[in-house]
Length: 496
Image (cartoon, rainbow, N blue to C red; front, side):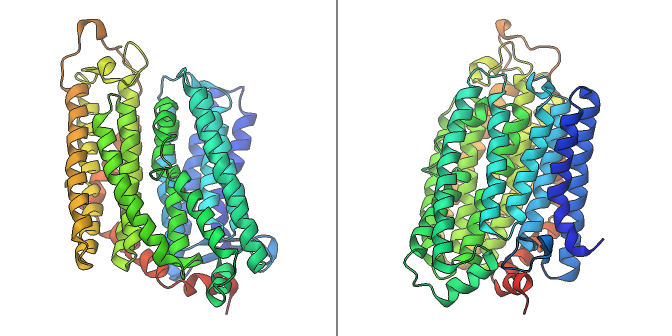
């Protein structure tokens, strides 16, 4: 196989797998195992791309249809996109495993696995594309799949949550189309490498600033950045567990990925202004998300609010903008994806044993007490969210602290430290209520619930990458080095 074709695999495998899974709708057992095989194949393809990128030390570019950039569509696997795609499929594979052991009715619907594979293909395509309009197309596939999976939820508020997600995403799509139109009218291209070159040569175009503002709003909505967060808690608490675990972990990273590209490739001239905004909103998100998570009385909503705070940490790293801070943001993003997916799966496993399908504390108090495996996994996951060793959450938090200290950002470091303490408070409070408090007599747990294999695999990775962090830290550092030298990306796509 031509090495440039490796960048196609993370998109084509789940997309084709989704079509075949739909044809297998009358054979549900075969469909489930086919879905797992397709997602595992996509993970293998993303790992092959990742290995090729790091072996050659340069981006892997596929000019779709043989049309040279900027006239055709380019798919680009560089240090950032290859790492994010691997992160995506690690979590998505465990999502399929969790769905196979879930007691939710929705996972047995014929359309569930085709839509789940489409969700993965949309996210991979949005990350790997080197063209803004193609990014919009893949983002729409992501939105449609996520909306339908949420609307089919067993939760009675699933349809309402799906409407909220859809209309917020529709707003983001409208903004993105306007931004695409502004950039095309101003520069005559939508290829990101070509745009980067033309914007750097002529940043005075009157339509550039509106495009920057619109794309900033798009990625804020996609990553649920404060104050564009209000749709997320309802959405994630009502979606099926296998779906919410994906949406709150890897899908929100699409917006984070967009901010990486905006500040290091597309709009380098305006990067200081964007970074200042991200610092303010990141700090606000850290405080708001942490306080809201501490104040909620629902386990899934607590984890949803926690995502707002954790994304805030990542935005702070992007906002500082140094090579060390960007590497810290990448490590934090990868770590959070695994930890948050595992925590939501554990919450779903507890809820599946409750007498009433609800994540409210007054329903699930003590439900997890007899489940030793879930108790241990949740405790380790809470440590990871709070940034305590030996989990990989500590590595991300430590790198963020080091990058802030190197730039004398002590005020922000105080906020980060206080938020980490707050994270420990609300996760351990949830642990105490769900896994330590004796269950009330009228709240007896069901004898069986969702299986724990998927969250166990993720928590195992969380601990492994905490004890052996060097590979991830080195890859994140290399990705940050590439981001701070955008001409590497531009020359790989356009040649020369």
